[in-house]
Length: 248
Image 1 (cartoon, rainbow, N blue to C red):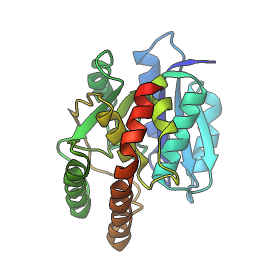
Image 2 (cartoon, rainbow, N blue to C red):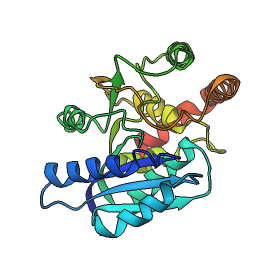
Image 3 (tube, rainbow, N blue to C red):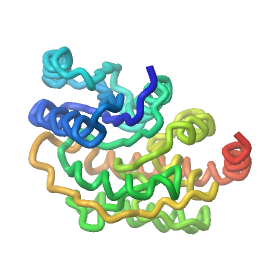
């Protein structure tokens, strides 16, 4: 079975909103692409609350929902495994978002309108409802990418991106090994350096009303330092990766 459009959604400890979010996005797929084969792929990343139980309860009644349970590997790992599943299902288009109900479905149409102009299209949280430390780190990351790679991406790690399925397959083949902590950043950098126009389209970002942020305080600083180191090391590989993407 091949899919026209799939949504990749990592989920971790979202019992308070997961049913509502799944209903919202599966309904969006049916309403936006009637008659097309679509799928919401939820990767439950070893949730410790009732997320797994809720997903297992609702999955049989939603025909365009695919639930995959995995041991906890982190958001980035869950996203990559979701991408791989979307590619395995031969998705023509792949969209990635989060399960915390901070985005609105209507904004996907803004990215969709640019699909004939790029293989890799991104949103941009112009007004972002996150902890101050995260906002500062995002800004530092933006300028780190600019100085390290000579390319400017407003929101390189945003979980709101539309990618052509065949192009995503090429990008995944060039991800660094071992898998980086924040692979979405590397996918964005490779796409941009390979000549894709990401557009960085302003989208709505809502305040988080349920659940808790999984990475806070010193751990947030620690993983950011790790990501910066990974990005700097990746400079040595980037040119060969970009050539491989263009040649594939």
